[in-house]
Image (cartoon, rainbow, N blue to C red; front, side):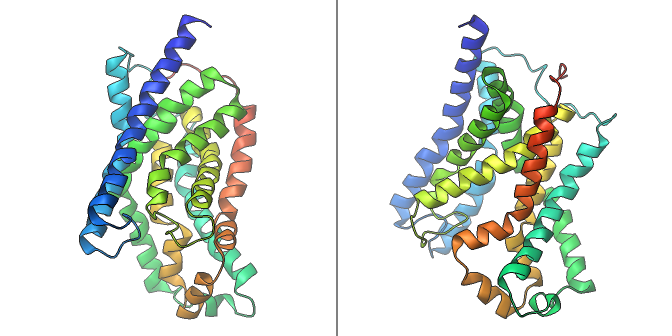
Length: 299
């Protein structure tokens, strides 16, 4: 094994330890103090803490990048912090358009497969000029969570993935990187984030689903990051995905009956339909990424 490869592994290991430790320590600690899971409890104070933990927790990977680079004397020249548009505008645009299309696809798939016998208008009667305006406002408010999204993306796509791509083939790097990203969420998933705690196979089913979701998203996020040599498109995608996912759009547009019927769906049914657009995006992105030439030097 070359010295360069050893150094890459060392830096990656340090980064991952620093990224994982805060949640591994903090989430069980809060559970012990309050006597209930952080994201599935009824304590109002705990709910406020959960929000703060979620927002600032997304910035942990960026902090891990800074600490690792400084501790191992790694240069910042190839840090993916530049913003390059020439010849890459399509990828920047896709980082905004794709998550919106994925969310709309999720709504349509739920209606087509699970709201049988109901017209689209009856299923989503709140699609009108007023609620569309609310939708656009919700989209614009995604800017508020840009920095937390940037915090994750600089860590996962701007630091972890380039290291994995040096150590293994592209396919393995996408899968391994997605699983690592999913496992980073495991303490949150155990504490009820995203799926709650009342589902078959808790918490292992939730952790497995989160890993699968992260592998799928990793395809597109790694593609746009490597194509643009910049972390910002991935951060834009991430913030819009978090702020306009189908679950949020259902609350905006769906009727009370539709929401009730969606709540009666099993977890696999919900995930299959709401993630339909993500799966299509992942397949296309993965193919494009495999065909991508060896990246040039980043600035």
